[in-house]
Image (cartoon, rainbow, N blue to C red):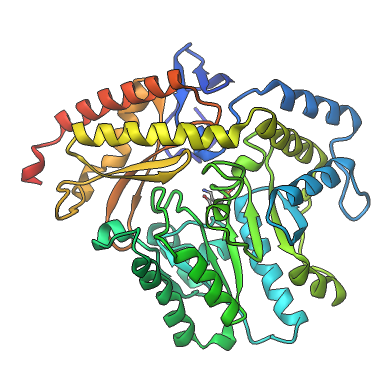
Length: 444
Ligand code: PMP
């Protein structure tokens, strides 16, 4: 009997040990962590350098309240984070996770508006589908009806624009006209809402859990930046999943040379070694807030020295092991091999992503892009089959707009060719079993 209820009524095996890209349950069964947990454990499990840095920090101190003390650990991590993020983003604020970081980014933007005499600005435009967290503020900017609807009466509705899904709309993602087409939706939304009321635009550079590794079309990101500049709107980039090297660059936004006003980090930032998140913002955003009396916001565990020591050691390991390059190189290889699976398995309708943030989507028919019937719960079943065979993958169904079951394949950035062989082998077998369980695709 478990007293925990976060897994619903299903029971999961007890985790006994995790090392590198592998995890073992109590019964000795081995799993390849093909989703890095929830796209968290980017440097693999039980990295000795990180454990050692945490041990050293524990010997010094495990807590210092931010209003009483500065800590060397948080100062060092802040300096390293500023080095890694685009020029001009100089100010860092630590939190304990992604939702807290998204909340903090939105509240910082709001306080900046107040401090600069633009008090009427409060709307944060975001996209649908999207996922930005589970606290009420982060949920209000999340485009995922299953998660948001029960809480709708408790939240202030925020405007949403469609996430660019060129593959479903039959548009060429490499054509700049496609990028313009989707970016214009932001322009239209701002016009509809009234630019003077819009505070910020929030987006993930490469969609994560909600869209299954959706990469923006050519020209989209630059155009979004221009639109935000034109209307004096703060661009917040949610890099919770894409940040810290996952896509083959430190930030997802780096691929397009776009500098956000506020960057949101968590997940791979401390890679599962400690609960940690951060916002990184420009002086232009933070200084007016500090001049006006400071940021009226903060969490008890903010800047926790143990979490910051872990985060710092993770960033060091990313550099020492060349993991960002490896994410790009292995990402290309894995992508090509997923394309190979698509050739062999008719049920895969799309393969997409960047670096090691990769996904494939099931379709009953590739031409019409018809999804599998909802009642099949394909995404859950496929995860179960792969899990039985010792491969962990992460899956979701996008319920906003067009339905679609997608499977994220996002191993730690430390993966080797041998690991890729194992991942593809198990996916291949799992796809065969999954397809055999379904009625013929044509009948769906
Ligand atoms: N933003 C994005 C893009 C995410 O993927 C997530 C978590 N899946 C969050 C925010 C929320 O992070 P957390 O679960 O750590 O609160």
